[in-house]
Image 1 (cartoon, rainbow, N blue to C red):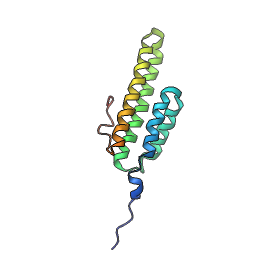
Image 2: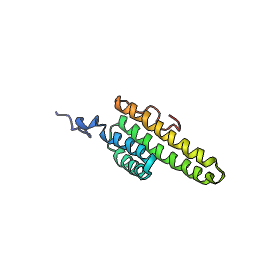
Image 3: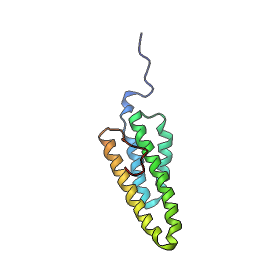
Image 4: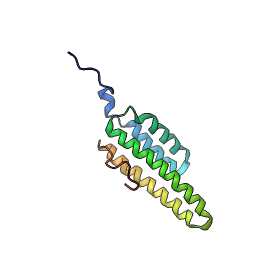
Length: 120
């Protein structure tokens, strides 16, 4: 008997290119905004067919987008009283740190250990 073909070819199981693109688009989104939307769409589309360890990176990127959007809305509303500007700046730092840490794990070939956490 022969083994059935794997769902994902072995050459693609360790392909880190698309998750790297997602992280870079999130980082570019700090300047442009729209690239973060592209990043989350790519993460949603690619998550299902990716190996489990890469799925953790996609989930992390998706949560980063939605949490950043939520806090950006809060920051925009509160910018009327001044504190929102501080919140918006903090969101930028938070997104940058999350993307850099996520890239670090990805380039080491490791799953993201806690993709559902709010912080890191």
